[in-house]
Image (cartoon, rainbow, N blue to C red; front, side, top):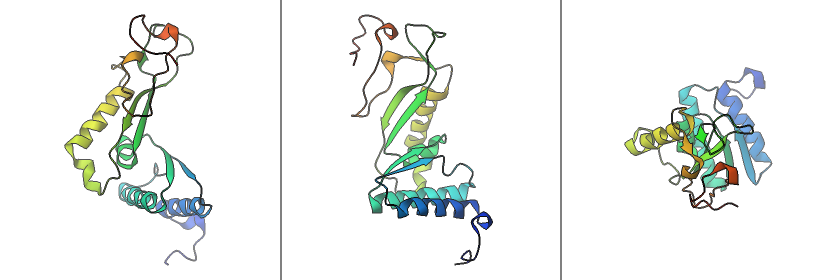
Length: 172
């Protein structure tokens, strides 16, 4: 109500983000793609929009593909978390050509968080620590055969020259 006569550039970052989400939702998309939508917001506004997005997700039964570099946000909002990393090993060596990021972990996450209090839960903090280690610590280099692909829909895609014979990895 207080911002009804304002132009978009006169709105706060949180208001602009809400307007952008509203514009996207007007079209009733089957999938809502969000790339770092809350990255430039202050913590309180970010928390408000996270809760808003969860409520919207439940009410509208949306499929939301949410990209973020904030692990707490990813674990709080997600139902599935894919962790991409360039820190892994395979049998080609560390300097082999064509080495790029891989999905090193694929976590099924608990269903919708009911409150921001979950962010202080020790189990939630352990999950964030595990994700940080698996994907972002250059000292932790899992072999491709050891990736944490525990989600029921995940699968291992390893080329013949990326694994040792006898590891039992099935190539698809």
